[in-house]
Structures are given as C-alpha cells and as structure tokens.
Amino acid sequence: MGAIQAIRGTRDILPGESGYWQYLEKIAQNILSQAGYQEIRTPIFEQTALFERGIGEGTDVVGKEMYSFTDRGERPVTLRPEGTAGVARAYIERGLQSQGGPQRLWYQGPMFRYERPQAGRQRQFHQIGLELLGSPDPRADGEAIALATAILQALGLTRLTLALNSVGDGEDRQAYRRALVDYLTPRRDSLDPDSQARLARNPLRILDSKDPKTQEVVREAPSILDYLSPESRRHFEGVQTLLTDLGIDYQITPGLVRGLDYYTHTAFEIQSADLGAQATVCGGGRYDGLIGALGGPSTPAVGWAMGIERLILLLQQSLPAPVQGPDFYLASRGAAAERLAFSLAQKLRRENFRVELDLSGSAFSKQLKRADARGAAVCLIVGEEEAAAETARLKWLATQSQESLKLSAFWSQLEEIRRRLEEAKKN
Ligand code: ATP
Ligand code: MG
Image (cartoon, rainbow, N blue to C red; front, side):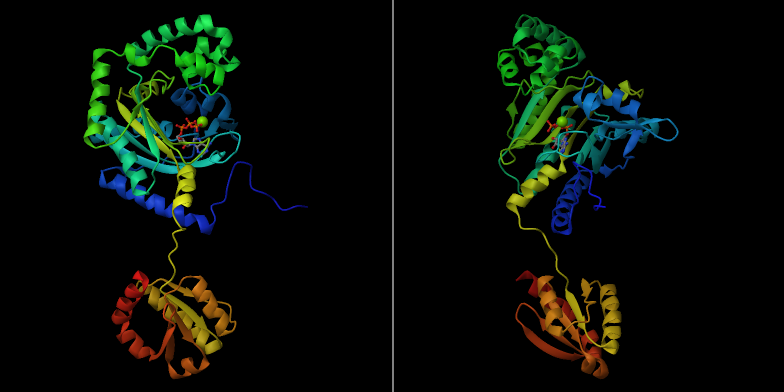
C-alpha cells in the first residue's frame, strides 16, 4: 500500500516557506490595525445558500468552483470560496451595524475553489481581505485601495499596476447592459460559446472573457463610463482625486467589471508584472447592494481580497527566506550535563531569550555544526567537566571566540550578555 498523498491543488507550507508567511502576515496586520481595522474570523464552511446568494448563481465560482456537499444531517454546506459573504453574514446576524459608525474589518484564512491547479492557482488557497462596512463616502474606497497599496509597498513589491473602474449604480448598469447587448447581439457569432450563453444571462461578464476573438469584439464595445449618472461620476472622480493626492498611480480600465447587481461604483485590481498568467494579486471594489441582498439593512460597503500564495511567490523572488536563529543553542553530553542544560534552556527562555536544546547526545563537534546551521548567535556548551564544576562554555559563533564562565557569573552578567547578543545579531 502506498503512502497517502495530499489532495490535488493543496500544498503544505513547510518551515522553509512559513517564514515568508509570517513576515507577510505581520506586515499586513500592522498596517491594517494602524488604520483601525479589527480582525474577524468566520467559519470556513457555511450554508451553501449564503454563497449562492452572496456571490451569485451566474458566476464561475458558484457555477463550477464550489466545494459543496451535504453533511450527515442532509444540510447543504460549502467550504467558503471567498471571505466577503461570511463577513456580511456575520455583520447581519451579529448586529455589527448597531456598534455605531462604519465597521473596519479584516480577515485571513484558507479559501476553497475547485479549479485547475497551476502556478498561483490552487484548490485550497489563502486570502487576506479587508471590508469597510457602513460608509458610502469615496474616502472609504480611497482608504481601502490605499491600504492595499501600502501593504504591497511595505512588502517591497514593485512592478505593480492598479486598474480602476466604476460600474456605477444599478440604474447606470441597466442602461449600459442594454447598450452592450445591442452591440454584441449582431456580433454573436464571433463570440466564444461561453460568452454566447452569457449574452442573455449576464452580458457584463463577457467583458472578462479570456478568449482572444471575444476580446477583439469587446475592444470596440461601448464603455460603462459613458453610462454613469452624474452622482456616480462624482463618486468615481472623488476616488481618483484621493488616489492622486496620495501619489498612487492607477489606470482607468473600463473593461474591469463585476457582473453582479450588488457591485456598485468602484472596481479595482492590482496586477504584478512578475507572475506570468496568474497576475492578479488583489481584487476588490464597492458592493453597496450585498448586505441588503443577504437580508440585512441596506449598507454601503467596500473591500478587497489578496491572494497570499501569489504574494509569497513574489516575495520569494525578491527576498531571502526570513529566518530567525536562536540566541543560544545548548549543546550537552553526559547525563548530569544534559540534565543541567535542560533546565538552563527553560530558565533562559523565561528570561526572554530564543533557545534551542540539542537532543542528540552526539559529539560536541556535531552539535556545534548544528548550532551553526540553525543560525545561533551563541553555542552554550555543557560537558561532564562543566557540569561538575557548575560552569558553561560560551562559543560566539560569528567570531568563534570562547569563554568559560561559572554559572553564577553567567546569571549575574546576563544583561551584559544580552547586550553583546544584540550587537552580534546586528552584524
Ligand atoms: P482569477 O482571475 O485569478 O481567477 P478571481 O477573480 O477568481 O481571480 P477573486 O475572487 O477576486 O479572484 O480573489 C481575489 C484574489 O485571490 C485573486 O486576485 C487571487 O490573487 C487570489 N485567488 C483567487 N483564486 C485563487 C486560487 N484558486 N488560487 C490562488 N489564489 C487565488
Ligand atoms: Mg477565479
């Protein structure tokens, strides 16, 4: 019998990679919490109806990509394919609107979509996302976009472009939809079969088609921007002014639409030139109609989600793996010495040092090699002689300098040693 393998489209994040994840998570959390955003954690599975209503039955996600099943109680459930629907459900169900003022929330975690696995596309992947609920103000859109940009910038990522559009409000879109259908209907035969099917159901999604012939047809299609009402145009211009004030470059991209009725006004995407085919690292926009469509009080909202795997791919291209070695690596040999080193390790950890204990019992030369490989600053060596004399040898690995210290002296000089460690780590 062969060993069991991971499910197709899932990945293990091994220690060599998890440093990147922690680095990214810390940066994102700092930036979001600085701006007043609080974390929300919702279940990773929900009633299937939530996603059908919250994402829309005509979408690829709901139509083809969901991990849906009935549980042992015959209830239809789905592993969440994205984060917004769950946050919106919690907002309504837990009455977050009654907390007064807009809610600034962020989340992070695994999402599930049945897609063809390839670089930057998995069946279990991870997103970090932001939702700003309760404000119709263009400053809310501006803040959401600015924070996405700030995170990407803090990660040191470059060669990014921000595509920006407005899809107006429901009425604007209805007028546009008619114009688009009028344009596409006589050209129906030049569209790919998927797009032909969408012509009746969800024509705006044809603008998203990856089919080259369809793209050619779409290039000459009417632009949604010509169908915006004066208020919608004001909102869009407001967002642009704020981005310009911040020096954030954007490209107005009239083909960037979201087909669903509760998406309103701002739509945006951030793409990287360093990712090949799966280039979008962040997608978002305003969704003033969603909370109402899910049965809540009409609530304007804006948000985005970033694909963490794609960001990690970029970080791996530009950064060495962030590793943090121990301050002390404890090498010991012989029963008394091992016992002494064991409690030394625990005591040093209580003093807030990073400490790793060698468990091998092998020759000191081997333990020292491991100390080096772990990137330790100091190897603390306790052999039988040292244990009997209540001393320890400190080997500073960067300089290879060694000293022998009575343990009592070691503890009384601890703050001096801490200072030297900090010094050594800087170099
Ligand atoms: P794509 O066009 O790449 O399929 P999408 O429009 O389906 O993206 P969104 O639903 O907007 O993506 O999700 C936001 C982000 O999550 C994407 O920009 C991407 O970075 C990431 N993402 C989406 N699906 C996957 C996946 N299957 N594997 C890895 N990352 C993903
Ligand atoms: Mg997709």
